[in-house]
Image (cartoon, rainbow, N blue to C red; front, side, top):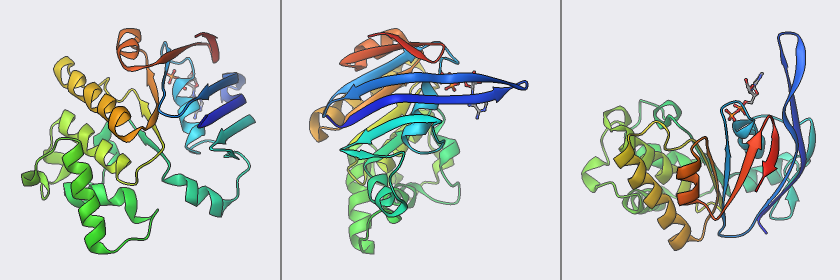
Length: 227
Ligand code: ADP
């Protein structure tokens, strides 16, 4: 097992009242498994993802990742774990610095999490870019000149450059048109098959999730109501 989430809970304040966005959630994820988290908008899916990558702190619960509880882990241990959990989002363009071209944007995924020299950094970025199917002629292209699908490929390259053990995809194909969506789905499947990566696939689209995932958890009002 790679991930074991226990009693995860998050409460927000809305219009001066508290409401529970994620309500005592439990789930596990095996090595090489893709778990889909599906549910209507507002059911709490992204809040779970954000807690897993520590963008927000849970009010209660445990997140055991490869045996360590990410909720109570100290800062130096967290830094070591950082590169093992990566996330891709719906609008990848927003997460890139527009000053960088493709090659240096992808390098950012490794720069602060692993010590390696300039040549090695460049080699690994080139390898990741080739894996996601972007050509060498794109290396020096500014990110904003890429199409939506190419930009999502670039985001995937940046996420996988450090060989993470868990990839969280939060509505990662929702903004793309159907044919591009299909290409990104087959790329994500290739990642699982060739790199043995575990993934959490968060979406409101049940059909897409059933194509992509080994198992589905259905959320409603902050709870997992069905597998
Ligand atoms: P989903 O990903 O399923 O669409 P979210 O996890 O984004 O759902 O949101 C669940 C609920 O929590 C929604 O009602 C949303 O408005 C609310 N919410 C999310 N983040 C915050 C926040 N930072 N402050 C207040 N409410 C939030």
